[in-house]
Amino acid sequence: MRSKKVLWGIVVFLTILVLVLTLTFTYKDIAKLFRTEQDPLDVVYEYNRKEISVRKLFEASYEKLHYSSHWSATGISDYKVKDVTDTNGKMLFTPITNKSLMYDLTYEHYYIDEDNYMWTLNGNYTNSTNYYLYDHGDFDNQSMIASYNFYEGKINGKESSAYEYTGHKLYSFVNVEKLLMPDFDNMSDVSVDFDGHVNEQGHIVVKFEGNYLPCIASAFGEDRKGTPYNDVIYTFDADTMSIISIKLRREDEYTVYNTHKLEKITDSLEFSIVDKPGEDCNELEIPEVICENSLINGVITGNGSIKPSSTLRNDASDKNDLSSTISSIWKNTITAMSDDSCTVDELSESLSDNASKYGMDIKKKGYFINEKESFIFVKYSVFKEEQEIFNIVMPFVVYGAQLYNENNLLISTEDEVAIYDSGCVWIYHEINENITARTCYLIYDDGKLTLDHKITREEDLSNLLDTEELSLFSYGDFAELRTFATDFSKQVSTYIEKYEVFGDGQTYVYYIINENCYTDDLYYIYDIPFSSPIDAYKDEDEFLIEDAASWQEFS
Image (cartoon, rainbow, N blue to C red; front, top):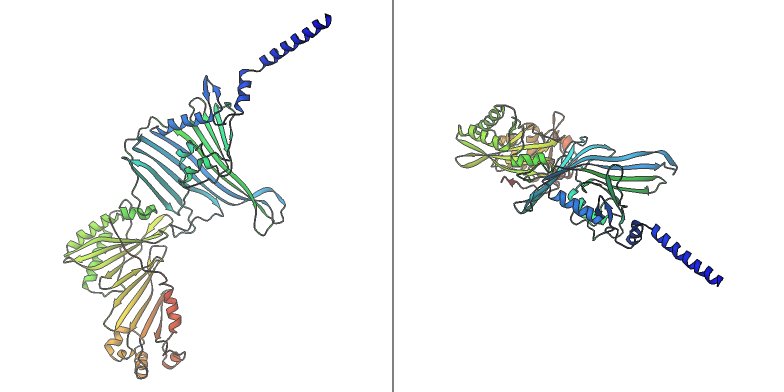
C-alpha cells in the first residue's frame, strides 16, 4: 500500500514538472520553433502591435515610394584594388591601394500617374588612383572630368529613355527603384538575415548574401543575370516601414598572374533615400539625345552654345572675288557677336541675314561625328541664285569638357571633300584637265585644322615643257623641272607628283614619278628631291585606311 502511494506521488510530481516546464516556454519561443520551418521571407515578427516580415517590409516600402510624387537617393560608388602582400608573398602591415575609382550618384524619382513617371541617375567622377578613364568623348587624356545622366520612364503612356555624358565617357547603370523590390522568386543561393529586432536608432535591418545576388540583377540591366556584389544591406525606418538606405558590397582576393602577390578587390555602392511627398511634379521631360556626348548633342539639337572662330581658310580651292566676299561675310558675322557665343541656328540666321546683302544665302546643312564622339564637323552651304556654290566646314573638338573651334574651311562645291573618322580632311581640286591637287588637313585637340600636306599631280611629264602648265604645277624648281622633263619625257611616259609637307613652320618638297621610271640617282643628276613611290604611297595610305564619312542632315 505504501509503495503505491510512493508511485502515485512520483506520477503526480512528474505531471506537475511537465506542466511547469511547459508554462516556462513563452509564446514567442513556441513561434520561434515554428518559424524555423518557414520561408525566411515570411517569418512573422511583431512590432508596435503590427506583424512584420521581410516580404511585408519590402512590399509596403515599395508601394509607398513608387507612388510618391518625388523621392531622391544620394550615393557613392567606390572601387578599390589593394596589394595585400608584397612580391614575395609577405603580408603587408598596411595594404597599399594601387587602383581606385570613386564617383558620386544622385537618383531622382518622379511620379504623376501610371502613364507619367520617370527617374534620373546622375553620376559624377570624384577621385581615382592609377585608374584611367575611358578614352572616349574627350581629347584631353589628362582631364579627370567625367559625369553622366540616365533618364528613363513613361511620358503620356510612351516609354522612353536616354543617356548622355560630359567629359570622358563614364557608364555605371543602376535603377534604384528596382533595388527597392527584390525578385523574391529568384533567391537561389541567397541567404536572408533578419531577426525582427529594432536597433537603438529605430531601424530594422535586412541583409541578403550570396554570389552575384540574382534577386536584384534587373536593377543593373534588364538582361542581367547577376550583380557585381555579394551582399546587400537594407535599412528600414521602423515607424514608417520605408527603406532609408541600401548598401551593396563585394570583396575578392586573387593572386596576380605569375607572381606571389595577393590583391584584394573591394567594390561598394551605397544610397541614402529621402522621400519628398510634398514636392509635386506637374511636367516630366526626357531630353532628346542624338549623340551621347552632351556637348556635341547640344550642337546638333541647338540647345548648346558654340564659340565660332572668325578664321576661314581657303587653301585648297580657287581664290576669287566670290570667295573673298564670303570670307568677309563670315568674319563680319562672327566679330559682331556680343558675347562670342551662339547656337548653330543663331549662327545660320546671322550668316543668312548678312549674306542677303550680297544676293546670297547661307544655311546649316549637315554634320559628322567621329566614333569616339570627341569632335564634330558642322557644314554650312552658301547659295547664290538658288545654286550651291561653296561649303563652310567647322570643326569642334571636345577638350577638357569644352568645345573648341580655332579655324574653318571654305570649299568650293566644284571640289570634292572627304572627311575621315581619324579627323583627317581631304580636298580634291582640279586645277586644269591635266593637273589635280589633293590637300590634307589634320584636326588637333585645340580645335584647329592644320594643313598637313598637299599633293599636286601632272598626268603627263611632257606637259611641263609648256611654261604655263609648269607654272600651274609648281611655283619652284622651274629650271630643274624643265630640264628633267626635257630629258626624261623623250624616254618614257610618266606622271609626276609634287609632295609638299608642312610642319614646324617649314615646307618640305619632294617629287614622285612612276615606279618603273624611278631610280635613286635622279636627285644627283637633276638636283631635284625625289622619293620612292612605294615609300610615299605607304605614308599616304596611313591617312586613308578607312572609308570616308557620310554627312548627317540636321533634323
